[in-house]
Image 1 (cartoon, rainbow, N blue to C red):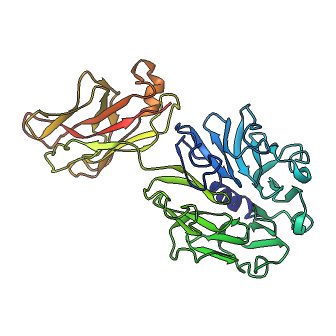
Image 2: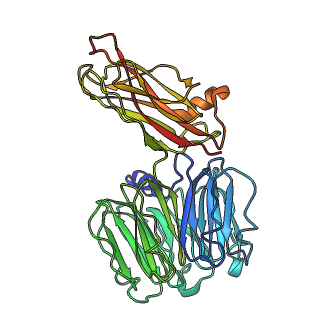
Image 3: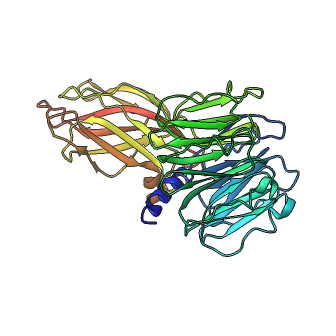
Length: 437
């Protein structure tokens, strides 16, 4: 039990909501709007894909669902807040509240909804076809719904589990505190007998007739009736499995899918980087995040040291989130030199500034942030950086908040202490960002 909680935290981190709100992209099967019905706002922190529907968690703790609604899995989505995790089964969904209690809705076949356990103390949920599993804070597992193929009867006992995963109609899985995997249910295509031995795993997921696991070194292992071989090598940070395919998230935020491509599960997968979560339904897939925000433009000024700092952004620009959009400018003199970001909403320009080595790239009038100190150092090298959460600044200064739908141009002004001429300051390149709700 001594190593339960560190590994519990590590396993749950793969399934936990992101720290900032992001957008959603979906692809694959779209008969019931699984793809085209995906919301377009930038306010989501977690996703879960079911059979033909998806449920997502918003930054404010509320939920939204889309796709097939034959059993109320969309229209029955709870409307209150306070949720911290979501899970989706074939035709039902679950959500975990901040107090550790569970709410279920959708198809109530075999008590998948009405037999949901009461009380608190749950930390992670998983849902399959007409049954669900829940991990308790004490490391034990409980389940409810259908007992097809002994998915409930054979739930392992003990208090050393750190993650649960519901497969299809044949099996379920759990990850133990020592990094080993347990599978149960009924044997079919090696789903139980081929479960990898040993330790060193950090995530497990179950598909219809297959299982996939992630090792601590970022490599992937599959077994059962796997439709194709997984990608080789390491560097992966999350996996999920569907009906006849699987998907993995790379450390650079890129997505790799393998298996059946009948509905474009492979050929229409996003090709950009910057994604932070993935989910695989029966034949549709969902990802959270996406390409880093902003379009770079304009030429960075060259400092006396030869620094040419380029501004980049990470996160999502939001008029209401209060945090989550970080502007970063590396390659500047460090050692706590002063700088500030300025921004406007009147378009781009490239007007020569100062001694002609810099360009003012934001059309006036502009708004200026407070001074920020450069991190890193030293003062005589291009090894410093500036960083600022622009969403947080807008929340602290509402009169400068551009509002949802605005297109913002931003740039850094900074001191250039090594310049011995009358030009002791310089400008970075610029970036243009679309602001969401």
